Structures are given as structure tokens and as C-alpha cells.
Amino acid sequence: MKAIVLSAGYATRLYPLTKDTPKGLLPIGKKSILDFITDQIETIAEIDEMFIISNHKFFTNFSDWAKTRDTRLKVTVLDDNTTDDSNKLGAIGDIWFTIENGNIDEDVLIMAGDNFFTFPLNDYVDFYRQNSFDSILVKEINEIKELQRMANVIMDENGKVLAMEEKPQNLKSNCAAFASYIYRKDTLPMIKQYLDEGNNPDAPGFFPSWLHDKKPVYAYKFQGECYDIGTHDSYREVCEKFGEQ
Image (cartoon, rainbow, N blue to C red; front, side):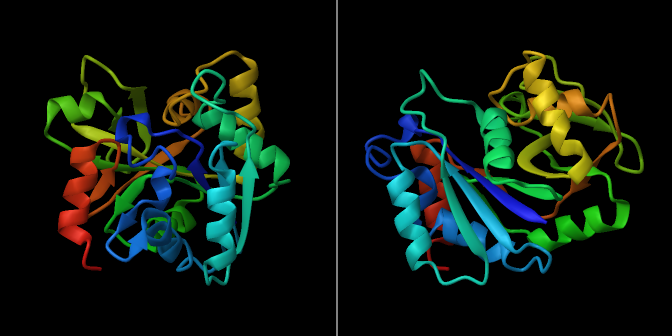
């Protein structure tokens, strides 16, 4: 299994913090967001390599981080050659760029590089090991505005995804998907199919929303917290709660 960490965004909402520093390398206490993510990826025995997909602006930042990070993983940093939001590939475009340029031909764990979470990532992979179906990460949320910013998920009593819609205005459940996915090796070519059909390449939740109608996708409901660090307020909240770790 390989890990892909999506880190090609420009995080303009966090300026000036992210004017010269990618969001994933912002500190939470003594460690960066990316360090916290890597710590969790390292707990998964079958993952031997982590790919970080960056834009051209921050490629050197991530390359320098990889040189100094002490890890058992092979760390490969890829430059998607984009320079700003006007020519970005989108998250799904970057996933396919990484699969193609990294010659990935096995199961993949995909993580957003700006998510800080408190649950054991290995529990999520255990869920995948047990069912062997493509998997998404979900949690029940009761704030309507927050739900509308995420992918809305309906699943059966066994966790099989029955419906999924990215950023809906009309909510059908209080279950939201976070930007972490596990895809089987045989699913990877379908990412290219999705893009070739002209579907939205931007938010990563668009792909499983399309995929679940074509093959089984299961949802793992985690216990704990997961923060999408996209604003000064959300970054400040995480630093205040977890900055001593």
C-alpha cells in the first residue's frame, strides 16, 4: 500500500501565514500538520512509501521537509507544475498525476495535507482490511453550515454507501465525509475514467460520489476529532487545543 498526501493547494484564505509556507507545514506546537499526518501513516505496517503532491510554488518547501524528516517511509515529493489557482489540477487531478507519475500499482491511502485528526489512522485501515472495499471516512455532524461544506453521505446498516453528494444545499443526512480515502488497486484506473469523462476534478469527494454507483464503497465512522484547517479561526482553534503535543 502507498500513501498520497494532497498538498498542492495555495491556502490563500490563510494569508499571510501561507504566503511563503504551505499550509501542511504550519506548526501546531512543536510539529507541523504534515508531521502529525506522517506519524499516523507510519503506524500502518503495509505502507512503505508516502507521496506528497505539491504545486510548483511550494515544491522546495516540501522537499526540504522530506530531507530532514526522520521516518521509516520512503518519501517522494512530486511537483504538479501548477503555479496558482488559475491552472491548478484539482485534488482528483493531483491524485491521478501522483498515481501516473509515481507508477503506483497497488492499494492507496489518500489524505488531505491540511487535516488534523485525533483518531488512530490504523483503525481506519483495519476497517478496510476487514471488508476489502473502497472506503471513505465519515462522522455525524449536527451543524448545518459545516455539513453543507462537506460531502453528505447516506449508508446502510453495514456501512455501504447508498448516496453521496459533495457540498449539497439540501441535506439528506447528518453524516459527512472527510478527505481521506482508501482505494483498491483495481479502482485506480477508474480515476482516469472519471477525469476523461469530464467530471469535476476539484474536491476529492466528487470521485467517491461518482464511484459508489459503479462498485461498492463503504464508510468508516470514526470516533474522535478531525479538523479541516482552512481559516485563521480553525487554525487558531487547533493550536489552542493541541499545540502542547
